[in-house]
Image (cartoon, rainbow, N blue to C red; front, side, top):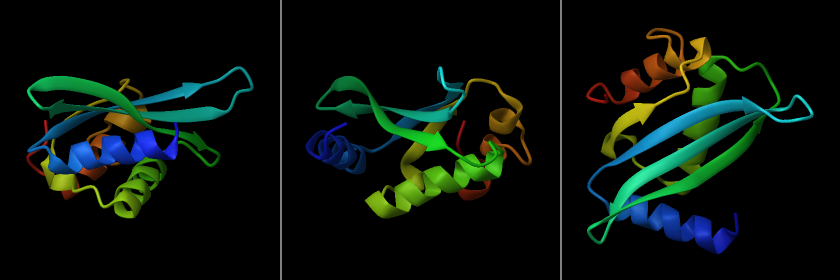
Length: 114
């Protein structure tokens, strides 16, 4: 994604009252794990959905590793977790576990998330 498009999407997310994310952990043809973060938000009365992050996961793919990768991106781009109202994952154990998975880690930061 170009830097300009990424900046535009991040600015829209910062301006919106709330947004949702969908996380997908997939393997490409070279067996490299890829983390995709797709953002869904309201932009001038129109629902938009864009790929926000496509990140190679070179370490283990635990919930903590995935959370730390996303947290690092959010801190760098100054995205506020508290505006996140919902998450959706692919259902893998590293994503959906309510204690050690990504979902559990996010609920510590944003308890009201669904």
